[in-house]
Length: 496
Image (cartoon, rainbow, N blue to C red; front, side):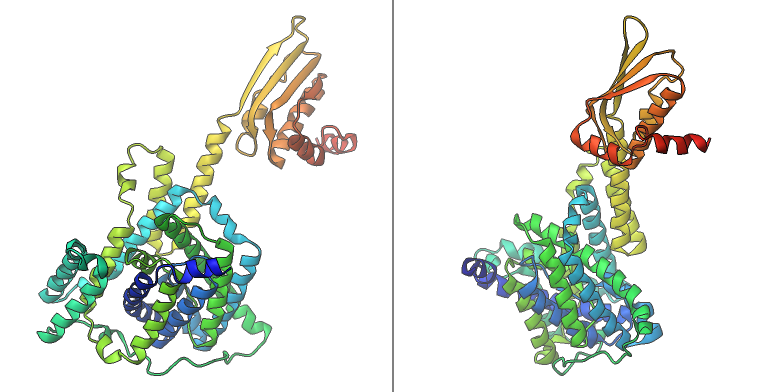
């Protein structure tokens, strides 16, 4: 217990503190922007980001991962806020948390093992593109100063680490933000700043119970939104946790993360915040800045609140160009450039899954839809590939009265038609032996195909022997098969 506490909280103190400060700076414009997307006051997103980051640092299952208000969640709230107002959003946030906790106890985090590597790669690449596209409004119809500041920021980010000693001590994104802010203030450069994004809160968040009637009508209104928020939030959080696992070469408890996200969203809703989830962009900033433990996540949340309440006069002067440069760095670092090179050597099906996932996410701006399409495509390609491994061989006895069929491979919905088509029902035989020693029947469709084969042979007057079934196949055939149940066979024949 004490060893885990020390490892998660105090094994990387200096780097975690610095990384948390950098992440806090990156959270501010994002939280404000996402609040605007959702149609609520900026303080709703800022309070949510503070609350979720602090709570998830304690109860989450992935140390070093940043959770806060996100765009993927904000877009799902627009209609609810527009039609019913902020109070119903807070109620939906509470219900979202409850649903996520239930999903955690149902161990739905384990479903991540069904997401293939090609889908994760597509998710990452699409997110990198979306992060870059989100910066374009800050680079459109602006003065030349913005381009110079952004370019200078990127130069500092990538060149500062090469400075001996100090380049390794301070994270370059933090240096970029400080230097560009000083330059903008000293030279009085007229460019867009954080202060132009909206008013910052000036008080601590307070306990707020949503002012909505506790009726089934309210539940009917908020449940569809809460379910969508819960699913999208957990999907993005699980994908982000997987990516951080890879970046840090560590493992994490996905089911604990599900519960932690739920607790964090309940806390956010009770303090006047919107629902949130893990943020891949900020998580990568945290990792690239040296953050590894829970302390970095808590520092990000606490320093965010400290800045908006105490350092607001300085905060509002940070040029957006500095934050744009940091986010462009994140998009470049997030994109899997190796996936472009691998297009030549990876199977076509893997490439299609990756590219389609990217295209759907970028087109819909919805990570959940893109991942769902990617997983579906990957499953179809896999089923098709496995179906081709099913082989049926046969040989005829010396007396030409008995044929032995040997089945090898997996029989399921994708291969059942091929299985049934491999038999010659018109051949004049006394006996047919079907050897299933090297076959496995997986589903009801496969069992139905076996029934079809057996009954067709019997209609032709041929005796059928099934031999070599393994235990699993025998169990499913005994349970769902009808060829050895006379009463069921009579029902089928009576229907013809």
